[in-house]
Length: 252
Image 1 (tube, rainbow, N blue to C red):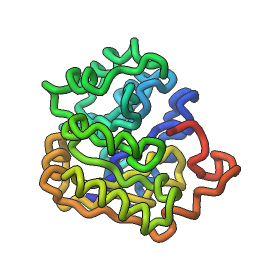
Image 2 (image 1 turned 90 degrees about the vertical axis):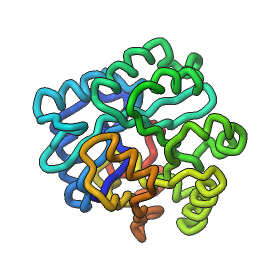
Image 3 (image 1 turned 120 degrees about the horizontal axis):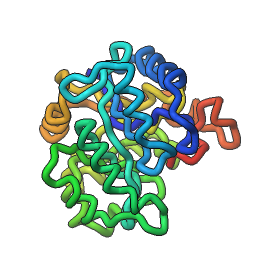
Image 4 (image 1 turned 120 degrees about the vertical axis):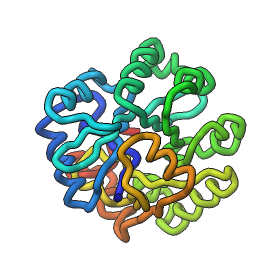
């Protein structure tokens, strides 16, 4: 099962959710060879509840995912905390909705929730917690907060991060960090454009239907991360418009 642990359903967090645009993304994911992905929309995106509310209206939800044009779409959310940005949480849709409601007082960057309080909100639920973008903007965090990092299930090798160093150096850096933290490294793209899918993905050695399945596969390291040869270059041109597929807009 080819899976992307980090995607978005809108071109920017300031846009309304468009089912037409989302279907374009799903088609691109399918054409890239993916079988599923986690829809980890930003917790402070415009009208967050419209995202999964729209999917409720148009697609069946079974086990722990929406079946969208043959693609398994697992509900998720990307949260920034006072100490660490880009925390990816994947869970049942009810858990994600409840979590977002509890995060309502913490959506402004001057008032982000603390990492510990966020973990308290999810500790009784079945949630897969991934530290996203370990190279982009927050490498120091991964060096300074080992007690927090123990609560992560994995860290992410993200396609966007591969532009920071050479692809080989970036991959080695993330895997070295994973080894030091004793955490698995999963693959994701933070895709929000059709050209992003398939640049980095996780080849799960089993088919997953629930978050529990995903979490077990990650914890048991039943997967392989795949990096496309062009992952760091083809869609990372500085100054190009978002419509061309760059990672140049506010989805960080």
